[in-house]
Length: 226
Image (cartoon, rainbow, N blue to C red; front, side):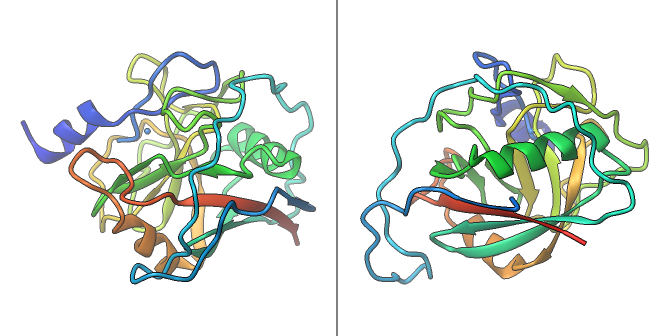
């Protein structure tokens, strides 16, 4: 079994419906509650925080408003390990990007974790339950281009192996490998255009079971339009 095949078999992510697992290989400013019990920055470069309590699964409605094709949308994600920004690719994935912006503006991602970290491969978040089986309660579909590649800094949406290519809920992954070697099955959300060192810092905090070695918590998401 190749490394990529093994990782695909182990990768667990939920699309929006809840109760299913997916594989990643998967605001106008809206402030969430402050990170719990933050202490000093440790040797990892991250603030030590307690893992947040699980949030309810599902309950979100499919966005009905499309993004403005004349604008560029960027989502900044603040964590206890630093901040990074994703510039969205709405041409490739108009439905997934519109849903991501809606969820980010609503505070859906605040006080959720990067529940799956595979060093040298991906970091994965967006599950309100923190279990790898949660989502917003809906799915979208944006079939990826046949030429889609998942290289360092590319952000894509996770799905189950049984779902059609490009299916997406709320769980997303950021590639930390030079090339994750994944097939073009995952809706491309965008690319990290600022704060890639933060992503790589988070990417080092995984163990052999693909679990974080310390909580990595999203405190706030901010959507900018230009």
